[in-house]
Length: 175
Image 1 (tube, rainbow, N blue to C red):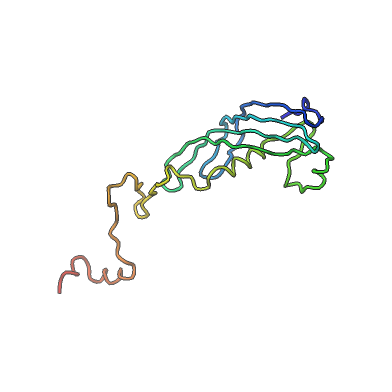
Image 2: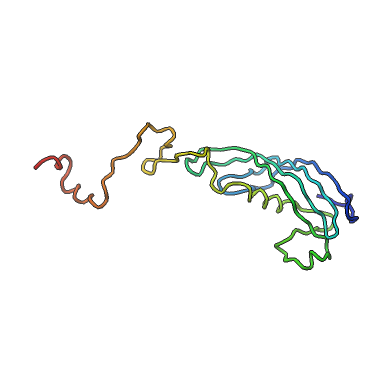
């Protein structure tokens, strides 16, 4: 984002309303904003003594899958962004570690990492299609939400499995 029009005069402000495409996957493994998805930016850029303060909202459509049943899920993420981009040579830039603050490069502010960070923190690491999703059957893999009532598999306790093999089918009733 070009900030030449903002200048370095403290207090000057500019409103930015843009729609950009996600250049890469933004978010977590199970739920994210897919590459090419439009992201709406509604931001205020304000010149302050140490840099440019960027505040506003970032929103985009998400896609992924339920962590329990693996069904596809979609949604929208709306996050509030507040970040300071330090001027080159400012006291903030000089006293802050490189990874802890965003910096202005020439007349440009690169919002990509700030958007990645704020969206990544907002999205759940374990997304669910619904709060009470029962998941998959651990034995056959069928979705328990669509399985018949009382779905189960008869399993022999592994401690008794060898004895059951020796008795064979139907031997448990004979004396």
